Length: 366
Image (cartoon, rainbow, N blue to C red; front, side, top):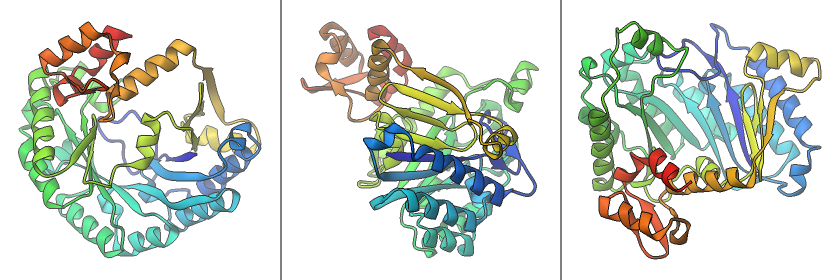
């Protein structure tokens, strides 16, 4: 089983963010820790545990998990391990913002069992960071990386966002070069999208921002793919690349449709054809836990066709690909001719050019 914890607390909402967050000056670490451990205890009676007794990965996502008191992180990991065994060498990831990372905090995370940090860098251009409403400086990125390394955490991932509005003048090649200079084991590269109910959406509606055009978006994605290959990184999923042996095991579990449980506000859980998700708002979630009522906001059972579509989409977005027979021969051949896929006869794998068209390619065979 794979375990995700959503830590919603942030110092500020980023301009592009539509995640379930709670902006707080002071983070209620004790209240959060108690609430998610109460939810965790409720899961122990669930039939899903009869088929999967142990924990392979834990992922603290957000929000900003690095704003949680380090003692809270330790208490949560201890509470999880007290109820279910952690697999030997279990991957335990914590998302962090650079401004939160000090040697003292990183050492506390490592002592608690965290062995992987995902650092939200997004850009190394100060003007871009201000536009994004990020609260860290470029200098803090460097110091955060040094603190993580000094604390003995040897699995570091950096997040970057590409496809920004051209008017910002962002130098994507320079950002990539700066990220590679930090020698991360893993890189996650996300294209900017305009989500409803965000500052970015309001700017776009008022004409203050012109979203990037498709040509520039594609060029930046393909430039990154080329640099990753040249520097020895394995581009193993649309948005993720790693040095050999450093794939994100937690995220890879999602792409394999492995069972996962989510704790905290807005967290999702899934196993076999079942899906459920929690109350989105932190305050409402906290009240539900305190009142010993359900924190589940919704459930669904996937039909056989839905499962097949999910398998198709997830397979094509990874370097593992799909059995070649899953795609009709004529469509496979057209993809290969167009440079969108490679066909070994046993498997079909999308190329970076194909990944740019993933949704359309899936729709063509769904």
